[in-house]
Image (cartoon, rainbow, N blue to C red):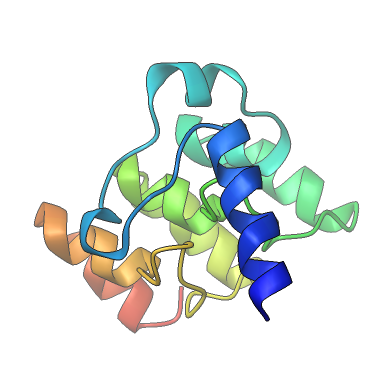
Length: 124
């Protein structure tokens, strides 16, 4: 377990810094967003057609960025409720927490995105 934590800490430092549990509500930086591709980029942009295409092609809906954010987290940060609904409909796991343990629901609640909170609670 100690080895795993060490590897995760080194990885997080290398890829953009640790996100302490109490500070897990930090949205992706412009540099991190610029590095996004695939579902993370589609979620950030709200590109429904690309989300549908990637999901149909078998993309991993729950892949994480260096801070543990899934495409659902990214959609929540970007206030892309339709993208989040499409990800949920495709099977993205809304219960996954980032490396600080914060779920897309908690991110949406913290930002006051009530429509998005409703989407997540409805399961897409």
